[in-house]
Image (tube, rainbow, N blue to C red; front, side, top):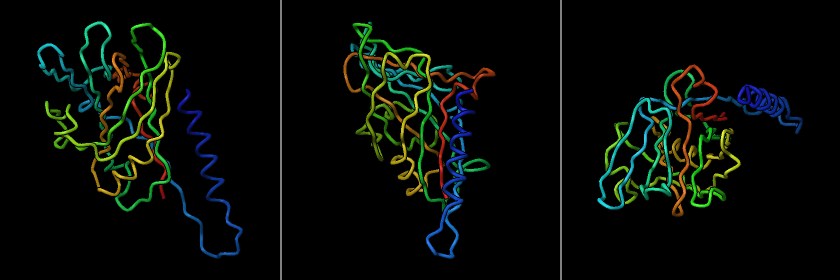
Length: 216
């Protein structure tokens, strides 16, 4: 329901932008297009690292949820990976100019030592091609970030949609002509763990990670 409402508001804004000109220039203003891309549940996943052994566990494909951060109870560190296909119907043309991009996620849980506070996170644009995750994707030295942003997830975000501005990441993905918008999400403090809804149920259209891109 919320996504439908936001789409209606976005459409109104786009119509307003494309309908105005009035500067005496006879050339038509850019025609903005808005597309919404759900993440690919086959390639979404996370990688967990055990601090005691250094052992890495990869979970990928129809996982129902993905984790990012450090578990306060076990110390295990998780890094989440989301894959949004950019090619094909409903994608973003290779010659498009990016106006904005927002990542919409639903937070299922936030775990901290005190049960309060925030979990700072970093979102990296990455390119794990082919899309199957491998252990080295966990490490920025082996899978370097192509671009990054930082933000925070709050306790009050649990069971809510969180909209994150990823315009700079999408612009870089477009510049590099990447076939997928792929991100790695990691925690910046210890401990603190977030769980992102990635359901494969009939509610996927409402709850799963979604990338909304406005371009012309």
